[in-house]
Length: 121
Image 1 (cartoon, rainbow, N blue to C red):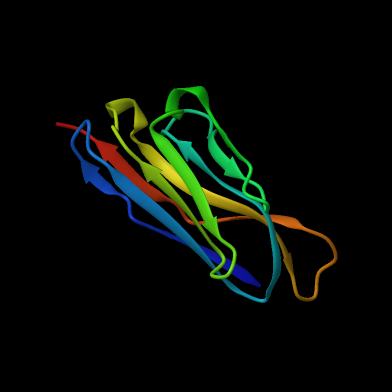
Image 2 (tube, rainbow, N blue to C red; image 1 turned 90 degrees about the vertical axis):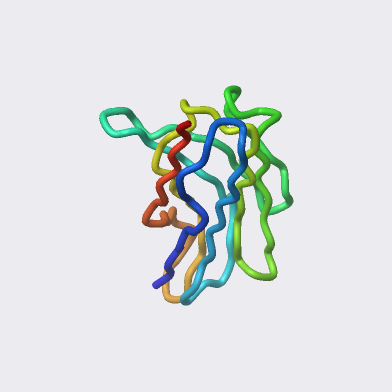
């Protein structure tokens, strides 16, 4: 099995920054694309950013220029630096990854448990 654990959420004022991190542990053989989704209660989960195994990145339009996704393949981690946060960024943020784990054939999608980000004055 493999686990993904997020950290770094919290309460922050508009215009400030937060950095989310997500680390993988367990019977991990390889990581493919990694990224972050977010969800507000009552709404669908939306894709925030992705990063491929060779570090090609993609962002939803509303966070371009403010958020930066990165990964450290040696540590099996993915991070999301969030600058100039806005109240509309408030959500539970979930990391995800396509991973190949020992004992299974092919890559499968795995999710973290989520971390709350609240942007309010």
